[in-house]
Amino acid sequence: MAYIGKAPANSALTADDITDGIIGADKLATNSVTTVKVSDTNITSGKLADNAITLAKMASGTDGNLISYDASGNPVAVATGNDGQVLTSTGAGSPPVFETIPSGDVSNMVQLATTTLSGTATGWNGIFTSAYDSYMILFDQVGSTATGTQIKFKFYNETGATSDNTYRGRTEIYDSAGIERSQNWQNAYPQFTSNMDGNSTGTGLICRLYIDQPLNPTIQTKISWLGAYDRTDGNFAYTLGGGGTTDYATREHTGLYIFNEGGGSFTGRARVTLYGIKVTT
Figure 1: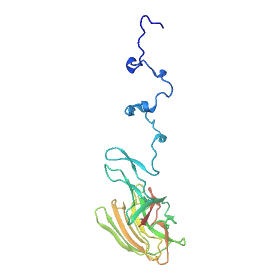
Figure 2: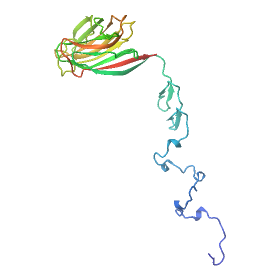
Figure 3: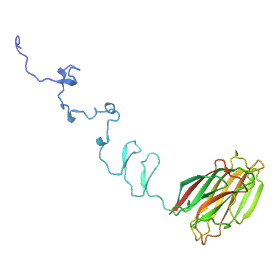
Figure 4: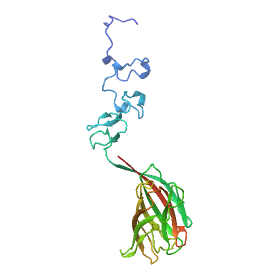
C-alpha cells in the first residue's frame, strides 16, 4: 500500500498495540503455547475439570506407601510397614503408622456354623476342631411343645458315639423374683431348664454356653452357661450352671447331642449358633 507523504518508522508490535479480545483461540498455532509461556500461578483448581487427574498423572511413589495428611492438612506418605504389622491411628492431627501388634494373649472369636433344633433331639457332631481352643454356643428361643420338659445335652466323642453319664456339675435356677426354684448336682448330663413352659408362642430358652478345650484329652472339658426361659407358672427363670466331664483322660469331645427330655419337640426359633475362640500368644 502506498503512503501519502512520509512512511511511518518501522517498530515492533507490542501487546499494547493489540486490543483485548482480538486474538481468538483459532488464531493460535497448534502447540504454540508451551510450558514456559504459562505463569506458575495461572493454573488453579478452577481450571481443572473434576476427575481430570488420573493415576498416571500422579508423581511416582514407594510401593506399599499410603497417602494421608499431616497436621497442616498437607498430603504426606505413610511409610510401608513390615509383614504382619497393622495400620494404627496416632490420634487427631497426625498421620497413621504401621505398628507391630503388642505381644500377649489375643482372643479371636469367629462364627462357624448355625443349626436349627428339630424333633426331640438334634445331633451336631464334628463341630469342634483343632483350629480353635474353646467355643461359645448361643441358644436362640429354643421352645418345647410339651410342658415341664428339660433341655439337656451330652458330648459326642472321637468314636462317633455319645459319652453317656460322664458329666459332673451343678445347675441353679431362679425365677423373676430372685427365688431359687431348682438346685441340683447333676451326675449325667448338663441341664438348662426345669418345669419349662410348653407354650410354642413363648420365647423359649435363650442361653450362652461356653465350652473349654473339648478336644484336649489330658484335661477336663469344662463348661459354663447363663440363660433364661419361660416357666410353667407364668414367670420366667434364670438358669446358670457349670461343671466338667469325667472321661477326659480317654476321650476327645467332638460335638453336641441336644435333647428334650420329658416329651415334646423343639419349637420356636430353636436356632443354635457356634463360635470358635482361638487364643494366640
